[in-house]
Length: 444
Ligand code: EPZ
Image 1 (cartoon, helix red, strand yellow):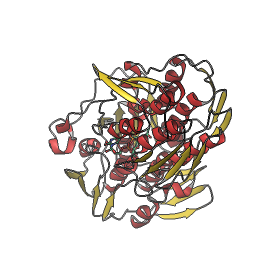
Image 2 (image 1 turned 90 degrees about the vertical axis):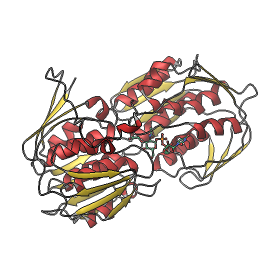
Image 3 (image 1 turned 90 degrees about the horizontal axis):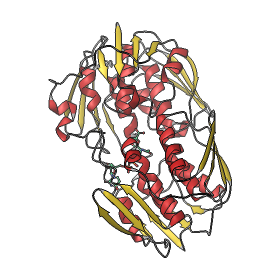
Image 4 (image 1 turned 60 degrees about the vertical axis):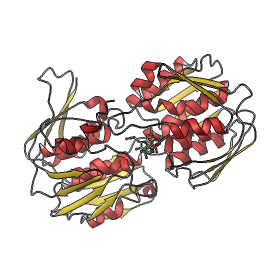
């Protein structure tokens, strides 16, 4: 088990380049299943979730080679339509392969993804959309069997919630379906537009991606394609928050500033000075952060739920009380219990988190509860007096490429200790159960 060891209160200063987006690379890797020929993907981040997606592609019979941040996939010899139990357990977002496998082979077999640390994560919207496009589904012993003997048909689909994954599965299934699909109440995240750009470059006919209504006219097949994945807006946001809570001066480069648009006014309300370029944002933090009265997580272009935990960390050292309301997932405050170990003052009531800023944090031994909550604890360690150790790095390595390297390049005193044999770090278990979200009992 690797751990991070951090000596805090080092002011972050300098410039970092942000890696490609995990949440864009995953559906684009799935889309390669639809391509009869070679797919070349550039700026693909080196993350364990990407490793898992490549494992799935190879298990389906695709040829995959990866050189640095480029991945070449040839799906010509696809020989399976099943995602194994172990893969679904390893990465629940493997469900995004459903639409592509069904579209390519006319069938798909996968186990029910199940919940994870941040919520129950149902896939009812995905299933309903596939059925509206002509697929039949049987479920047995926790496995889902989809079949579309006559191929998928275009349909008019309205999502009850603008689900990112369900939107992606509809784009993937509709790309080579017969006829027109009109998707209403679609998710508008930049990753949806990036997926549509990839599919259109491969010969698909998709209009309106990024808006709430997307029109897909099915085509007979998709041809060889080369695509560069957009930068990771969640990683960019996380490192800006790291600069903010260490009184730093940080420039995140190689990004699309519009994709972090919901965070910038919050950083300014907290007293940070921002300069925005065409592909970068520079942040100068104040000596003492101001509180942020109210932040509500919302579907894009609202404030992203994936930045909620890192924002919580920053607000623990603001000079006053801040409130966050988590509107997307039902149990995404697991990091709050560990932030208490740093001396933070936080209370959680249902979906509302109230953070009373403290003058300083003190280092703690903590374990990452999930991907974004784990990075929130790293940020707290960067700001805290003294030493912090963070275990559970397998969560963090899913979505941040070599974070210790980037943070070290900004002046952080952070080491990754490989195969740490020390005692297992037990999170505070006597904390208010409301805080830990354990009452829901999700496990990955
Ligand atoms: C994607 O998850 C992202 N993951 C998540 O990022 C992100 O938090 C989320 O979108 C919201 O932006 C990837 O892209 C791989 P949803 P997804 O379907 O698609 C409910 C990270 O940290 N819902 O938009 O699973 C669901 O329970 C991860 O990088 C249904 O009820 O999110 C949730 O409450 C975490 N039924 C809400 O919708 C469904 O069929 C939003 O989920 C599907 C979703």
